Length: 279
Ligand code: IPD
Ligand code: CA
Ligand code: CA
Image (cartoon, rainbow, N blue to C red; front, side, top):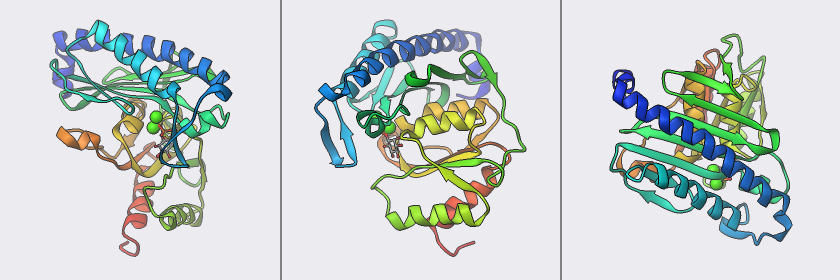
């Protein structure tokens, strides 16, 4: 959505209603997920793409709950969720949902996982909400209205750099391990240091909150990054666009976002990792 379109009164009221719903759903589904987390020893863990890529009934049922809440309020909206696929939109709005981002962390008893809910309007980012139940934190942003953490405004500090702050680096088995090594060594050679939680979406929220200078992962999906991108952008940071038109929304691609003082440097490191020796 262009800002003009987003700010048209009729579009704005539809968006505000959905943003309110997104925060309610994130809270409710986060509570349900937290209950599964506390009973995680009872869950059957299924392997998806390999032993490092797992899922459980918690992921599926939390996504089902989110879908039911959206469909009850806005039956013509589209929904893309990691676990149950894409339903096309009849209204122009598409919700992009990761019911549990950080499933590996979740099943192994680490607290850093979250519910991630993004909203697109005609292909443009309109809102993003990330709920981290174990920390009782809700990050929320709507295009043109700023970003908040538990209701407090977030504003990025341009003095944060790769050198004076931590940088989030994510990785999965879709990319060669050497590339992860090159990214981390490039960052450390530049005087920075890396950190990783179990959840890329949570790390993007941490960028928006000024806890990380930036975040990069070479291969992720729309449901991993779009809510975090809205948060970072509304907090005053920058991101590399993720293609969402047509079938592209189902594909994986690089994810990168950072505060204004670290974006160029992190982008250069990511490019160097993708095409070694080109700088
Ligand atoms: C994963 C997490 C992880 C990242 C992976 C993602 P999931 O999502 O965000 O931090 O490294 O690339 O797939 O599978 O836990 O929803
Ligand atoms: Ca995910
Ligand atoms: Ca997930």
